[in-house]
Structure formats: structure tokens, C-alpha cells
Length: 156
Image 1 (cartoon, rainbow, N blue to C red):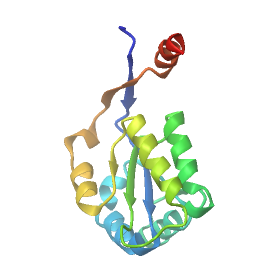
Image 2 (cartoon, rainbow, N blue to C red):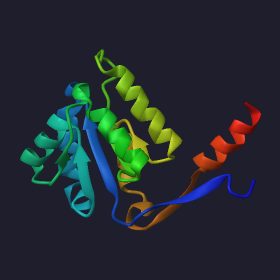
Image 3 (spheres, one colour):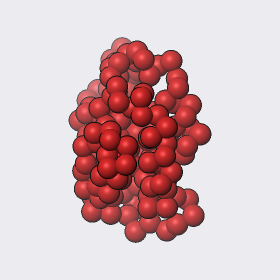
Image 4 (cartoon, rainbow, N blue to C red):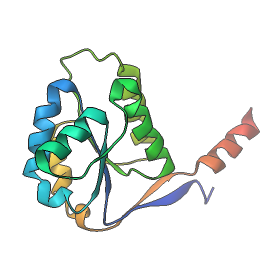
């Protein structure tokens, strides 16, 4: 099937979502401050408290969605599906239970489905933000969902 995949383009200016669990918010703010010059060249958004704290402490403009436990992770996931967000930095806290863990897992899954870069710790975020791909367009192939569903329907 020639149309099994479609090309998605991540523009030179990235739409980056910034998310951090409570135990990682200070680390996220420090990371954003450290990379302020690079981040300022991109469109930034994030979940509620994280977005507000980054803006207050670094001066970077960050569009805020709801807090994660109040649906913010789901909002970010929906924006990935819509093609609005194409890069996620999510400092998750592996040592603390999260009441919205199913939402977090859904966000991780949707990032995989749409093949977008996602860092879940500082080291990975450093590697991504310093990649030569940050300064150029990037075309990647994503499963053609319409063709996939049509093909799957034939076998049901």
C-alpha cells in the first residue's frame, strides 16, 4: 500500500509543550531558564501551574492549559492529534504516585502514535534541545490512519 504513511512536517519554529509533575517543577523551571535563549525562538505551552511558574520565573511566554489532574495532559494530547503541538518536554516524577496516571500514559501513547519527540527527563531534554534538528524543518512519516482504518475494516 503506497499510502500507508503520510508525511508530517515539524516546522523550524517548534510548538513545544512543557509539563512537570510537582516534584519536578523546580527542575523544569531551572532547565527552561538555562535554555531560555533557545526556547524563546519557539512557541511554548504547558499545563496550568507549570506554565504559570515558568512564565513568572523565567519571563518566557507559555500558554497555559488546565492543570494535569484537571485534564491538562488530555488537552496537550488533543493538541498533538490536531497537529498543534509537535514536541513535548515532560519532567515526570517516577517516585511519586500520580492521581492522573492514566492521563499521563495516554499522553505518552499519543506522542508515540504521532511520532513526536518527547523527553521525560533532563538528560533527554538536553539532547533534544541541542540537536541540529531544532534549527530546521523535520519531516517524518506517520501511519496514514484513514488508509489503515479502511484496510482494517475489510478484515472485520
